[in-house]
Image: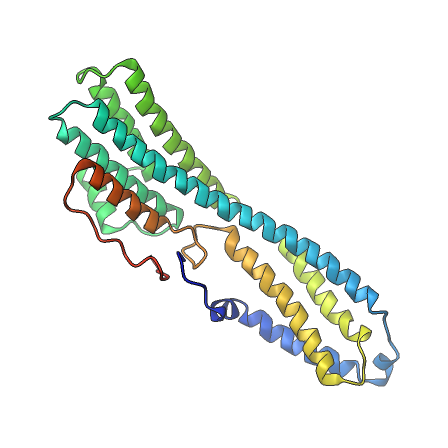
Length: 293
């Protein structure tokens, strides 16, 4: 996940190194073919490759816009998770009378584990030791662990509502927060499981290579080096833009442009422990670097 610092240009170069190699070979081959007598007779108005380039640019703009919307929605949803986690604990502390530290601690610990479990499940990573230990300790076995933890929230609230003197309105408020957390979880799962149409990428790649193929025939044949460089650079820029949108379209892949779910979970943990008076507050990792988690 990337939090503050700029992404190295070498990261993008590594991501498209194969396409760069193919495009380099393609540009040199097309440039040399354009020197053959038969190909030298072919001359296209520069307006034709320019028109195709405009079409590619419009398609890339749409693709980038859609990818950014997915990335921003993921960040917005996790912002709501942060706020709802704080609100849940604030209401629990307010509604339960003094001396019910055990109940408050159980809600706090479960909510903290839920945030870590949700982030790890979205990234499809094995659960951390901390999450596994909690699940084993409380004998929670489910396909959807985050959902099971929210069920445990609801079940405990139902069991203690009458015995601790919660009013119907107080119980409704707590249930409303749990419902909002479930709604945020569902939005994250939708973003994770909805695949961007593969046909769109195929169409873009095809148009980019067609553009690269006809571009030399609209350029001056007297400057081979310039012709090859232009034929190489412009399609590579198109491919780099497309790769950027591909990276952004899945915000839960644990990459540099990923939604920083682990950092947000750490923020939630620190906030909840401060609210409940827990002295065992973790030190948040440096948020200016990239971490694989």
